[in-house]
Length: 175
Figure 1: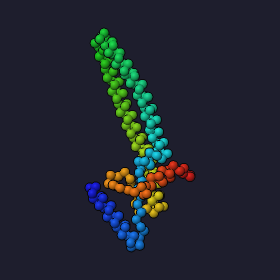
Figure 2 (figure 1 turned 135 degrees about the vertical axis):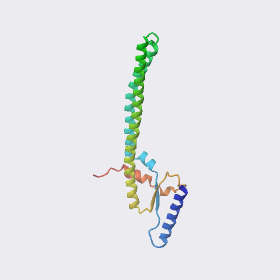
Figure 3 (figure 1 turned 180 degrees about the horizontal axis):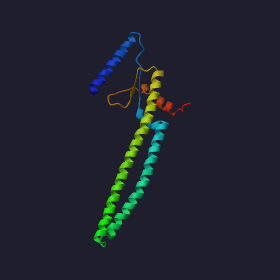
Figure 4 (figure 1 turned 60 degrees about the vertical axis):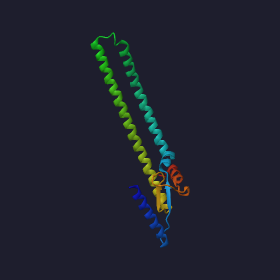
């Protein structure tokens, strides 16, 4: 499958190259490291900070529940031997219910963080893709590739447009 894609790309490059001989625009190729652009642009860094703050907030909420659970467990271990059997069973049942609640809460928090991270990342990537589109149109590029794709074996650093994308992403938009 990947070989087919590489051959199609090579064929397109050859066709575009020969089109230059027929008077068409010359082939202009560039690439962007979208991961680096995402990590270094201001909006990407702000998204990362927002996710980190959300994780810290959730961890604090979980810590309180975990302390309560640990206290209940210690109480059960210390006084369990001297407790009435029915009271001990009731305390154990209460502990198991709270343990399930904490585990469920943790799963829900993790799912929320992943969802928010995906939403924020997707928004920043859409913005960066729009910037790449503008650079492609303004620079009359024939092709702009994603630099981290596994089928790309070598790309000259002179074709790297990542810094330009980051610079434009960090430029305040006039509204």
